[in-house]
Image (cartoon, rainbow, N blue to C red; front, side):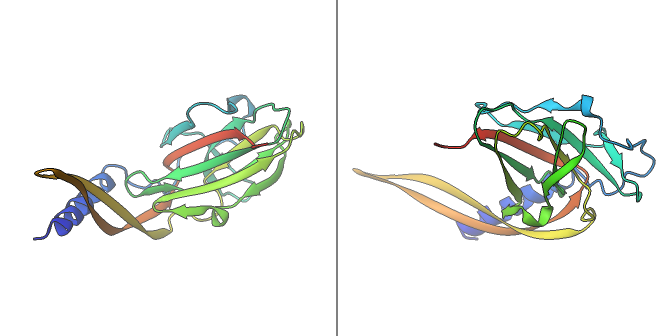
Amino acid sequence: MSTTRVALVAFVALAAGCATRTPPLTSLAGRNCDDAVDLASATPLPLDAEKPFEARVGAEARCIRTADGAEGAYLLFELPRSAGPFHVVVESLTVGKSLFAPQVTVLDARGRAGRGLEVERFNTRGTTLQGTLFFEAVASERYLLVTSLGGHVGTSQTRRMQSIRTTPVFTGYVSFVVSHGAEAERAVVYAHNGHLRLHARSNPH
C-alpha cells in the first residue's frame, strides 16, 4: 500500500473515531427553554483580543422557544463599545459529526431583533462555517445572538477534508521535504451542539 494511501486510511479512521464520541443533538424535547433571550446571560465580547472566544455548545446550553414553537440552543454576547468600525467573525466548527447550525442576530439594548446572518450566508471552509458581520459605532446595536434556530437542525451535509503530511528526507549533502496529501469526504449533521469561535476586530484604517 502506498504512503499516500496509508495516510488517507489513517485520516479517515481518525475522523470516524472522532465522530462516534459526539453524537449530533437534533432535539431539545423536554428542555425548559426560555421564552425570551436572557440579556443578563450575555458574555462580553472583547475587541482585538489576542485569541478568539471559543465555546463548546452542548446539551447544557441555554435554549429558547419561539412563539411558533421552534426551539434552539443559544449563546448571547455583548458587543464591544468601540469608537470606530469593527467586525465580528463567527465560526462554527465540527465536533464529531455535529455542526452547530448558526443563525446570528443583532439585538438592541431591549433585546429587539435587528439585522442578522442566516446559515446559508456562511462560507464553507472544509468542515467549518464562517460568517462576518460589520459594525459601525452605533449605540443601538448592543448584543449578538447566536442560535440554532432556522430550520436546518437534523439535515446532513457532506464536507471534503484534506490532510497534508510532510517528511524531511536527508541524502548525503542534500536535504528536502516530501509532502503527502490525502482527501476524504465526511458527513456532518446540523445540530444544536458543536463548537463556536468568535473574534471581534477593529477594521483596518
